[in-house]
Image 1 (cartoon, one colour):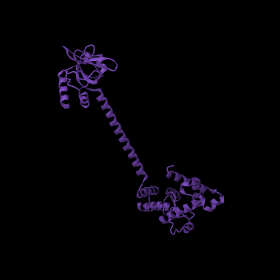
Image 2: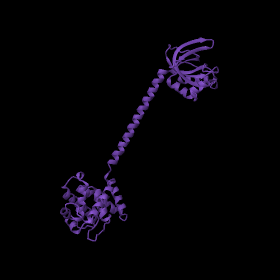
Image 3: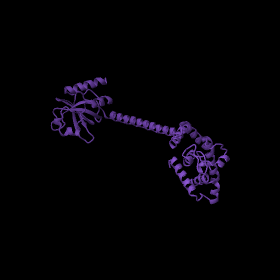
Image 4: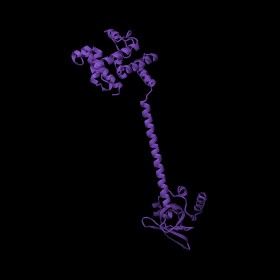
Length: 328
């Protein structure tokens, strides 16, 4: 039925006659409006109606009266501002005065100085139109809420995913970092170093980034590094220190990293009273690094970082590297 009404309406429009055949359902009215309504603003048409004959415009108002004369059936609509409009129509609506309509009308040949010759093309009830608008607004609001919820869920998923990095991903990140520090190291060697740093850091409850900072400052990740004073391997362990830690071969990366991580933990315990890692300060860290470099006896003797240029430079360098590795 709706399709028939639309077909009849369009046929009448193009034939130039009045084609009103009763109220259209809202969706049918909107489809008709989309298809035939003029794109010229109504106010422009009102100002020059003689140049707008045949244009389809939209008006709304309450039924304030009807009449039938030699010219045909007339419907009188009164807008909210009190302006009355007369529309010619084939069939008069059976609604009581006061019903609010929204109408599509064709500008007739008689509209010369004003829109005084209008022909009904189709109409719907304004109340139905408002309900449709409200329904569409609710649909859009629900869709927007769903989209916001999905966006929030996506952000939360990404956050959770980023927080829950797998062990293998972490090892790969450290392995790649080690090879950037020492490009001459093979992938297999870097894998051993990365796993050792992460494993012994967990065992001795120190930040693996601190272990990396110490090794980077001591040897720049050179497995065979030897200092003029005889310090050996990645963490530059002195032979006597290595022996006390149970390290038989300081040039073996696993043994050296084990000894270095254990020694860092031992120095932290001495200067910070075995405090939890998350409760340590950068001053505690500085004292532990000074002890790692100059020995705990020198820190105790001077009541803080010894006044040795080498030790002070070492503490500043490792702390700077550690801050960068932490993104500080």
